[in-house]
Length: 219
Image (cartoon, rainbow, N blue to C red; front, side):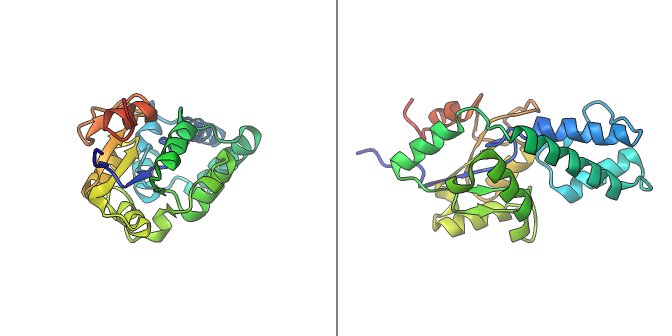
């Protein structure tokens, strides 16, 4: 019998399992418009995969230090909740297919996300994935968010698996850098932003293609 290459799989959340990135960009643009501002082309898309403090710094550079960010936060959150409650949160292609395959193979899996604990729980509930993950590590659980490897290292520790035996799925460069820094093999599945794949071991068009290309699933 051929030895198994990986003993666990760790997923990013936004943009990897959940198709939230377009929702975030559209609701952010709408919130800014209500405040009489227009986001420069590509600005909100450039924040994909970046933790909130870093994103705030980028927005401050473009919108000004005196911009009313607390009001933007409220408007943006309200728009996201309204959209989420109306439409739910769609999944990226093949999420259930891959999770079912991992269960059938007896491979444990977890989430490592830059979202806070509350945000992650709300998103998983809106996407119907609450019962799919026993281990969800968020930026609330660690000292430093991605691109630091902390969330990935903690997820591996909670799984009881050495990081080198874990496969990580990411959509962003920031996340891929974090997973690689943790010592994991990285499959990148781009969402909103085209990527070179230079931070990943395999660049794929979707989750199943990535699982097959890296040798997690039979081709």
